[in-house]
Length: 87
Image 1 (cartoon, helix red, strand yellow):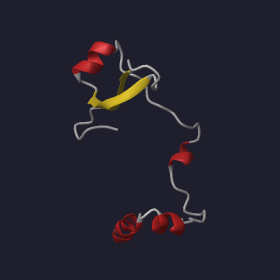
Image 2 (cartoon, one colour):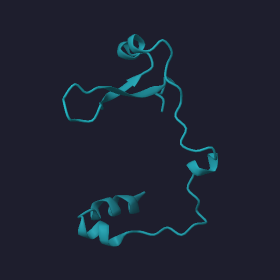
Image 3 (spheres, one colour):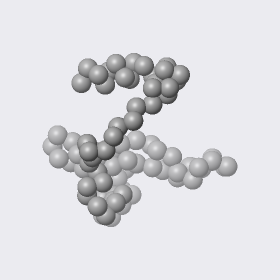
């Protein structure tokens, strides 16, 4: 992610000091020039990679799309469907 000025945006996590909780928690989104980020790292963190195949990042419109109508209706997510239809 990047700002309009093309400054990188990072998810910022901090150590959780509460016992018996997850070790880290999300504090917020920071731009690469943020003081907390600059003070915590000598170099900015590298980019994350979820796959070696760049094609995995794009929707394959050749595959069938299955809509979970039961989820939309049962979980009262019908407004999400209406919003998606408008776009």
